[in-house]
Image 1 (tube, helix red, strand yellow):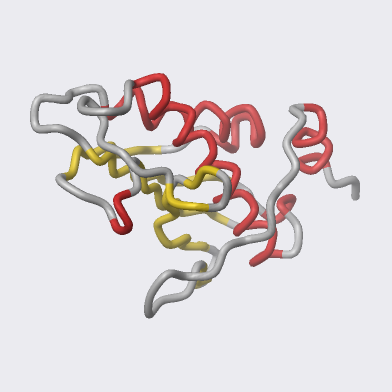
Image 2 (cartoon, helix red, strand yellow; image 1 turned 180 degrees about the horizontal axis):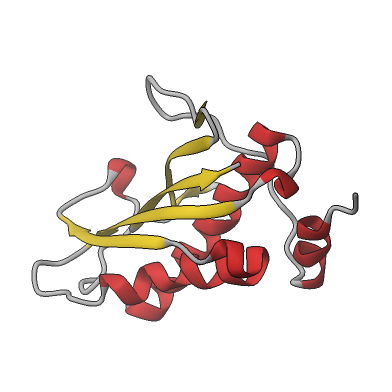
Length: 152
């Protein structure tokens, strides 16, 4: 069987980084039955938390880029946990937390950065249910945090 997801990543010019360790007392991925739950991943820039608040010192397009970078990290965690991305039958659910000023209302557009990349990488299997929330703060001051649930 060919590793078509890896081929699609290469076509998109995406090289998966080594998966990051948890930042506290949890694991990055847990499988229960045919479902994989990924812990929240924060946006990183140059290996450090991508700090900021949407609507205050980060605009929507920059937030969308941060969410896209998280999608790449989520995919890397899936790859590390499963051994092959071809085991993913479907991305089921994505939940995005956006560090937002109280009047900011474009969280859904920020999280599109993650969702759109998952569609590109996994095709129809990347189409998922989703929530996007504005929150007062995210650990380490990160601008975005996203978690993912996948079926295998």
